[in-house]
Structures are given as structure tokens and as C-alpha cells.
Length: 312
Image (cartoon, rainbow, N blue to C red; front, side, top):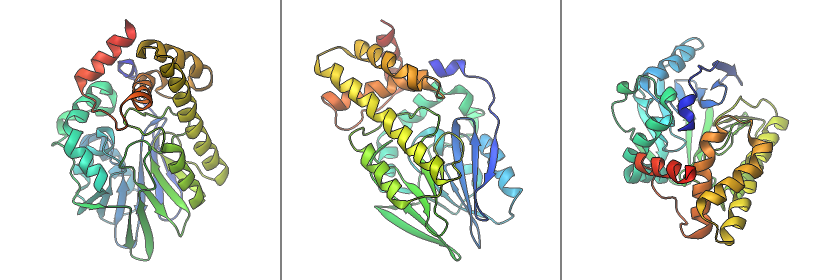
């Protein structure tokens, strides 16, 4: 896979957004959000392994000694959730849709992602198994971390059907998971292209003043937030339009991919993991535009078959 050539270590940033919030980012690698309440800490997305999570924990300990009580899973992908055991949290919260996806395809996704992203699964032997939520919700759940209000919200389908954002209404700060990226290619292998724009509209209506995307640097003002929403929307819309047009002509997936790659490369090719994500993104868009409303399960075998078909 293209990502197996990506072995260079990334520089980690730990940015303070407010007295209560921090963003752990690493030049386009998966981000983690931190919320510090009156009596404990919430972590949104966990890194890929417990060993990798130790760096997040160390940075949390540099700003607070409060216990890490809550882990939130913005969605089910292994690179986001398999480090959860390191935090010793009392509760792991996810949407009910996300739990359903873990039941249906978590094991297959785990195997697939470990093979796709070897650098992001350092010390994979430290993973005890799938991460299971202890609390699930539908639609919206409000947590009170002392006087600090934290809303977990399903605003619509996009990156997956279970996407959850973490919203601090008092501070106008949002952790979006992979619904929003910035200067990083959205992975859309499990996406709903038709629904994603409306979900981005719902995020925009919250008017976040700061936003931590799934990948890319923390966005520290409304202008940067608007730019990230617009660029995420444009990528998905441009890709899906290209794929639908080619699929309507009856072209096979290999030709649809090549045409879409050539169309998107000039504008988006400099984004992190463009070459890695695009085969999966085009495959999912082709499915949605033809016969599969819901994403098919990715397995390591299906990954290999996709790459082989595109190289043919």
C-alpha cells in the first residue's frame, strides 16, 4: 500500500485552545482532543495503540493531574480507538451506530487498518483487542464536567454512519473527528457522500470559533474553521461528481479511478495521504453511485484486491 512508504516520524504539537481544551496533532496523523473539567479529563479519540497513547497521557499530565475519566470515540476506525485501554477511563462513550459498526466490522477493520498503516500502529502487540463502548447514545448526549457543558452530537452521516462531534457550547469549540480535515485527504472508504455536505452544514450552523479536525492542525479562529469546512466539502463533492459522471458512462472502476485521480491531483495532490486514500475513496464513491447505498466491509483481502485491480 502507498502508506507503507510513509515511515518518517511526524512532529507532535500540543496546542492550548482554552483553559479547558487542548489539541494533540501531528502533521496530518490522527488527532486527539482533550477536555479538562472541574473533576476530570475527557479524551476524544485515543491514538492507534496503548503505547502510542502514552505520549498523549504524558502531555495531559504536563497540564493537569486530574484523572482521565472519559474516552469518546468519534467513530469506529481502528486508528482512532485501539489505544483506549491506556487511559484507564471509567467510561468509553460512542454513538449506538458506532457500536453497531464495531459489532459488524470492527475485527475486519482492525486487520485492514493495521496492514494499511504500519507506522501508525507502533507496538501493535500492546492492543488488547477491540475497543468497546460502555455507554452508547442516539442523537445527542450532554455531559457535565462540573460547570463545563460538553455535548456529544450526531449531526448526520459523513465519514461513517456513526460520526460523533464533541461540542463545548460555552466556549464555541468543536472536535469534529474525521468529518472535517484540514490540508489532509479525507478517507472516505466508509463514507456517505450524498449525506456529508448536509452534515458539514450542521457543523457550520453551530458557528464554532475553534475546531480540531480529524487530521491537520488545530483551527484557531472562525476563518480557519470556514476554510476547513469548505475544503472538506469541495474534495468530497469534486470526487463524487467525477465518479458519478464516469460511472454513468459505464466505465469500469479502474478507468473511473484514473480519470478521477487526474482530475483531483492538481488541486488536492499535496494533501497528506492523498495517494493512499484516493483508491478507497473512489471505490466507495463508485459503490454509492451504482448499487451500494451502505459501505461494504473492508478486509485486508479486499484491500489487496482493490490495489491489484487498479494496477491492472
